[in-house]
Length: 134
Image 1: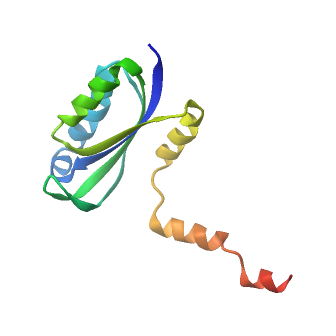
Image 2: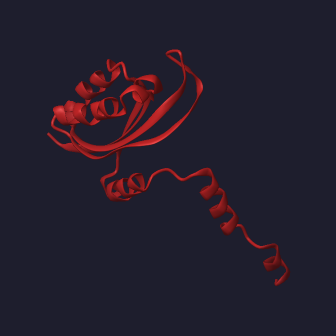
């Protein structure tokens, strides 16, 4: 069977994660590897307030994973994540193989902080003085 590259974004139960972060987060990679998949990156992305309550939770841990998996194992993986009590929600997308290295590199760099995003937006904004030069 063919193998695809996937991006998985998981919202984890904050209570269970804070109680034992290593066990909860390792379950994602272990589940993928148990089906013969290869994890490229699996990391904490951020903790944030949820837009709406999910299973009684108002906050969630966002966990980002990039992995390779045989296409015939995808349904099994999906089912295992559905029954995992530590995962509130998840989304898995197949990605274009040409983007794999760039996405993995971006994931390893981590999320952009709000302050950094604001600074880069200010830097990219055109100067008012430039308009006078025309």
